[in-house]
Image (cartoon, rainbow, N blue to C red):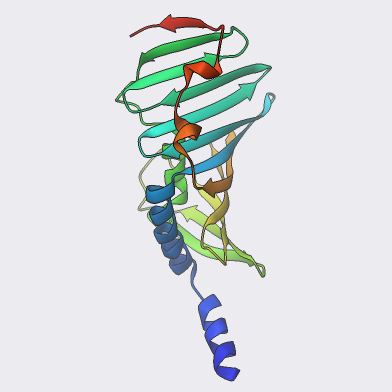
Length: 202
C-alpha cells in the first residue's frame, strides 16, 4: 500500500513543462488517428462573444460559425471549399486557397508546444486537472503570439480541457475538445441541402 501511495504521489508531482510535453504526445497520437472537434469563443468588445465549432480529420475540415443572426458552414478537403450561407440559402463552391491553412488547425497550435517561447508554471491544481500559466518570454519574437495563455490539462488523459488567450483586443477561448471524428462530420454532402442556390466560382 505504501508503494502504491508513493507511486501515485510521484505521478502527480510533475513540472508544468513535463505536463505539457505529455499533453503534446497524447494529442499528436489521437489527432492523427481520430481527428478532433472543438469550440472556439471570440470575445470582442462592444460586439459580444462569437462561438464557432470546428471538426478536423486528415486534410478535411468543417467550420460552423454564427454571429448577428448570420450562420455560415464551411467545408474544406484540401482542394475545394464549400460555404453554406443560411440567410441567403446559397452554397458557394471555390478552389481552396492553398496559401491559407485552416483556421482551427492554426488555433490548435496554441495548445501544442506551449513551452516554446513561453515560461510556464502550474497556477492551480485540482483532483482532476492542472491549470498552467504561459507567459511569453524574450526569446519569443513572434508578434502574433499572445503575451499570456492559460491551459487546463486533464489529469487522467493529459488532454487539454481549455485554452484562453488575449490576442490584441480579442479574447480567444478554445474548449470542449473531443476526438473520434467521422468522415461524415467533415465531408460536404449536397443531398443535405436540397433547394439551395449554387454559386460555382471554380
